[in-house]
Image 1 (cartoon, rainbow, N blue to C red):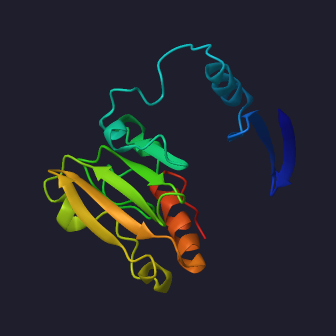
Image 2: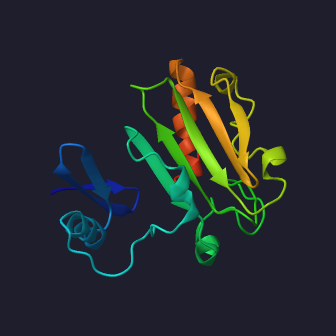
Length: 183
């Protein structure tokens, strides 16, 4: 494991980086966290899984895709998370009291488009379009399309051909996954 320290403003940031195998890079700011993840990769499991296999989001994840992600919305953490959909609109979220989570799938060897799937208990989730990337010029090149997979589950498709659009897509995706960047 590599350890980097950097002074930013009045804080000293420590970053831990590990390569547990050729396909995985782990980056964390807490040693205990990255140690636990490395132990779990090696089969040493303590406690409950962060994203248990019974979450409804897993139904929409393609774990064979080259890139994929899962986010589960936790109401108990909403007060600590500005990107949480619970508790009304904020600067980094789409307000939805029925939100369950979201998934991201992209495999460039199969197609040049990525999908984000958003299950919710809200009856109007498809008409409110939580997966739209807005009206930025780069968003138009994503050629966004959405469809309702089943009641309360909407899927967005994004064309990742144009580099400006890809950068914009990744910026918005990070926010959707809970890593909003404030500029």
